[in-house]
Length: 602
Image (tube, rainbow, N blue to C red; front, side):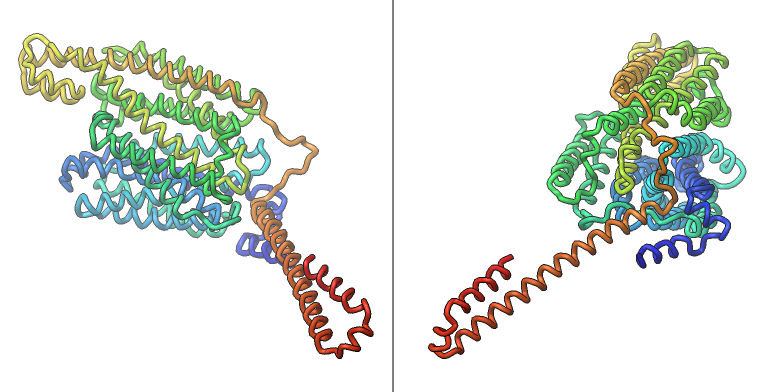
């Protein structure tokens, strides 16, 4: 009992008096915690996209080589995706708040280093450190949310808000980056993180509850390293394919093969361990495995498509980057709306219908966008983006909620890391797959343009931007013919890519039919576990059980030692007796020896 009292006093230490009652009863304090977690997620989501519009300014100032520029852009998601499982499971062991706060500090320091980087190498290192900080922050936010909101209905609402904030961050990043680059220098896109981190660190330490998971057994360091290295190799190879390198290329195939071998060894190791790093039994539950698959399919079908749509808006329709960002805002607003109303819809419709309908709506929106052509059609674009954003967020929100509900509070960090890793892998594979489809459909349209030399056609077949440069160099009728042919070929490729994306989304809708039909919640008269310190109480109960078991084992050892001592004393006493005394003792001495022996053996 004293241990529980001490833990409770530590839990409320430093928390304002007016919030202590709500924390114990599961009141308003959990929503304050959600606010802090959403700010954390917003920073990571913004930083993932804010650099894209600053790349030309970075190139002009630091003059990186082609390989260095690729690493400046890609090292952040590459490192982040590789370390999600490592830090997600580490948070389960040492404390999710601790990992989250360390991530805050590292994220802020890396942002300052990136802002004032004097050469490409320093910027690459800073971006890698930002990826480490992001990997510490992202799974911690979702796993703390899982523990702070034990009631599924409230948790569904919290996940809806959480996912809406993620959508806002992804959309705000390019707009914020464009504004900062136009008015300041490129390093300002990183400095925007510093004041928020300066506030988030003390506020998080003050308000966020400590959250831990299952601490049984040692943390599998070797398994964590195997998972990180395996994911790094796989994601690196996938990104190589997305940048145009073929799968048969040695630099692409070797990392994918090495990563796959490491991940297979990691899975085998986890199955053999008594206390695995990741509970692979979660994948035996259809709700968990299907939800993870739906996340991968949704991102696979749409992230690559989003990049292609941005090229269409800028290169075919001639919009500026800022105008392109504004055209995509309806998608963001629709995603926000889906996240905010998703919890009630999930209670009414259930996970199966929600995810399947979300996929179907998104596929319908993607097919409607095939009406995009060489001329601008704003109504078609706005309508398609609204339905697409609402359907996509409906799918992702419901899949995340269903996946997280299958994990216990003790394994929430590992489950959150699996969800975030599937998100990153789906995005990377989608860029590679849909980019390959786009290139395959685009190249034939520019391979034999009348009046254009074969070498120029070969250069123009790399991308629409490259075709524009070649047409400007050629000039005259040949240049104009190449520009017109490349625009038509790009639109044709876009339509093919949209059809493939819609097919993938319909596959996701079919897979969603295996999800649970209803959202199972405790009855209203049941008293669910409440309060952010639920994980602490569960951990204390496990610790108390282990202490009691240890005391019982110690008592048995002490009793056995006592009986052994008595046996030895009886044997010594018998040996010291005179022969006559031993005979006089009759059968009494053997009886005493037998009793002592039986007691010692028991």
